[in-house]
Image 1 (cartoon, rainbow, N blue to C red):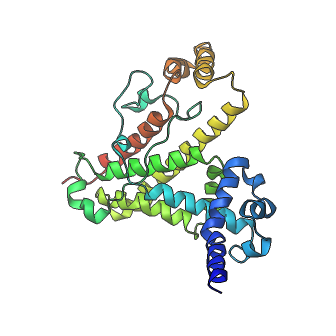
Image 2: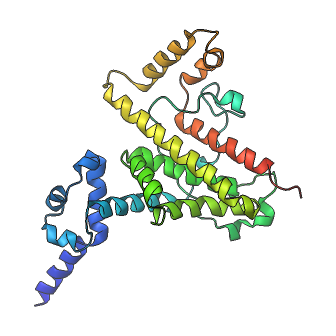
Length: 289
């Protein structure tokens, strides 16, 4: 009887909702949304469909749970030093102004993964001390960068995530994903000292940029993979930059001017540069002390 009980416990653990969601994420990473079927899931978990339906009602619920699990993990990780805005690294580095930033969309697959959200709460940061123009380690700005990079890296690691986030934000704002991201950014906006009347606008602007730019980067990476292994990122960007340099100077003077910045730029640095531009606008609009 004891042996049977232990086997039942092991079976219950193996078929928990968490294990099912974990297996769903593995299938999504391997084959995309079309590869996530209950048949494939039962084969991966070595169980029957009834055991899975006990925990999730349908594929839509499973996709939502997988999206929420990945986002929660991205926002829960501790930030590292690299979450801060990187120093400029020549033409390919992050820009200090809109003129130097180059095109808003990156044109190649992203680089290495990075940290996720700061665990520091607005209360710990201290709204009174964080609202000034001076920025210190562990500041709300660092917290926002960490949130941004956590989501950027999660979307890059899980190519299916971008479309699922768009679906959730368009159709299911009351589910946990949208409030989870909004809360993570919004707490840092509040800690910056932004007036309450501007909380929604400032948080929305950052959230839309983060998810839009990260999603575009993932799309670029996926497109680059279809070109074949013989076309690497550097070669792709060099070809695109050369094409920009050859555009009609009367019709495309600006695009020609930034063509060199496109060649060899770093996607994550460019992404952070965009976050910093928005943060600069937010902090510049703060009430004078």
